[in-house]
Image 1 (tube, helix red, strand yellow):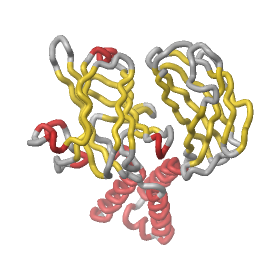
Image 2 (cartoon, rainbow, N blue to C red; image 1 turned 30 degrees about the vertical axis):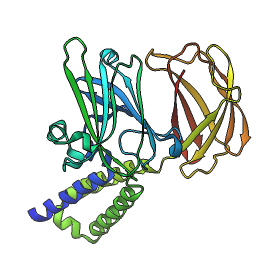
Image 3 (cartoon, rainbow, N blue to C red; image 1 turned 30 degrees about the horizontal axis):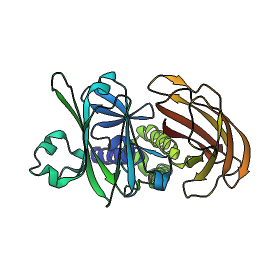
Length: 322
């Protein structure tokens, strides 16, 4: 009886690992908080995101990247102290042997870190948003290292985050495996075999697993890619202008008949757009006319585009440095 119970709980634990890969694989200095990626440089924090504009448009990634291509790393400070510190950024091939569990102590043991380095941005002070770009030549396992140094005291703070280039995720497999597992448990329960193992606890266990399967269906949510063109040229400060948004699904097929809502602002200054841009016309072929766009000051802006179709809703963030 005890052995059966242990096996049952072990299967439940394994299932939880499958349907919650983002929790099980949390690692390094980047974490998810309130649907945002946050990098922790010791006690200092910044919003962290990565773009691969040539292949995935404005889709954001926390750490793992789908393919080897030009990647843009962005840090938007949550602590003002980072704006006055010299920050350097290094990417190395993972030679620690620790994989996802690599930490700063493992990096410090590397005898030839320059030999393992594939990208290095020397220290610089960026008062607004820290942004670097690197062209990955190969897929594989890497470690990102962000260091911030106080100019007055010389004190150094460091964040280390392992990540994979060429990461494809788990797709629908967690949902399929969970559904199959639920069906098997239901069969055992109806046949009376599971009741012999777990007794009255089987109902609670089955309900818990059913809830986890329902939660895992979030992987089926719609996913869109959004690009934009400004027919009037580069957006200018204090001028009303228009954009043409092109919306496609994850496979690149144009999305038509969508409901498109737009807002945004300057996160650093904690204010929104001075106008309320809206889509005034669907142009066909996945193109939408957006009018009423205006920026009243230079700096880092984010435009949030919410796309709703019959298959779901996604919000895409467009980063702009004006």
